[in-house]
Every structure is written in structure tokens, then in C-alpha cells.
Length: 107
Image 1: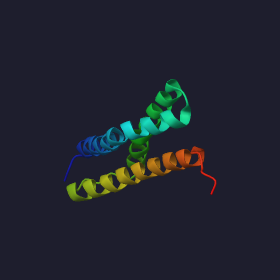
Image 2 (image 1 turned 90 degrees about the horizontal axis):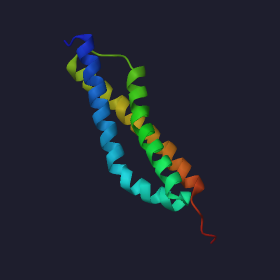
Image 3 (image 1 turned 180 degrees about the vertical axis):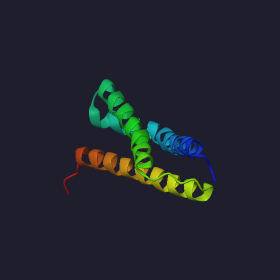
Image 4 (image 1 turned 90 degrees about the vertical axis):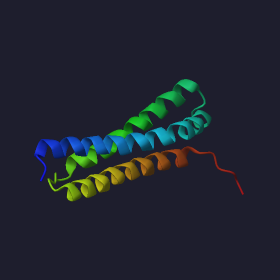
């Protein structure tokens, strides 16, 4: 069994690692896409940074809302589930925002 403070620190560290990895992987492609959609580099940079903050903050929020387990297996399972759901929710939100603002070809 883990001490509650140890479990909490492990939870946040694991979540930060997963969320930061997702943000780093998406930084460049999202930056290029937003440069095309936003029109100016300043707007693109702002929305890229904002998206990356949301990519990290959303999983942290999901993990904070879940119950803290002290069993190592339950802790990792719950943390990964909450963190990945948070990343998925952030991606869905960003995807919807980009998709609705992307130019369409008239067929």
C-alpha cells in the first residue's frame, strides 16, 4: 500500500508525463495547421500555446476529480484511464474547433 501523499505525487507525475508527451508530439503539426488557419504568426502562436496548456490541464483536471487509490495497480490503472480520457477530451475539443474553421471545398 502506498501512502496517500506518495500516491498523489505519483498520480500527478504520471499524468504530467503522459499529457506533456501528447503536447510535444502535437506541437509542430498543430502549429503549422494553426498558422494556415489564423493568418498571422501571433494568433497562431497564441492558439498553439493555449491548445498545449489545455492538453496538459484537461488530464490534470480529470485525474484530480478521480478517487485516489493506494494500491499500486489500481493507482496506475486509474491514473492512466483518467489521463488518457483527459487527453482524448482535449483532442476532441481541438479537433472540433479546427474542423469547424477549416475551409471547405465546394463539390
